[in-house]
Length: 130
Image 1 (tube, rainbow, N blue to C red):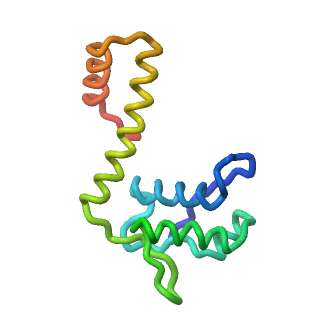
Image 2 (cartoon, rainbow, N blue to C red):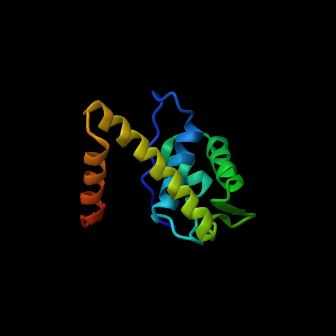
């Protein structure tokens, strides 16, 4: 189990358990948390973030219901071994969201469809490590 940099905001309109769930899901999807790896314990997360164990438990329960983690009684919560198809589908959804934002920005910038395609081609050829 590694130390995750989880950040919550009391000023956000998003409930704390959703903020937590989103960050852990992102860590799983981007490979920060690997298959079979233990998630931070409920008590550790609650203590570090100064939130209720019930809030952390709710986030983990929803992650389990979505197939991202598995709670093993007495041992903790572990990242599920994910089928490639499910992982791919989650990533495609993220890509769709990012592309929707890119298309909206392109329209605001008055880019033509051809210019947007050219920009995408250039980006695809770049060595993007981040």
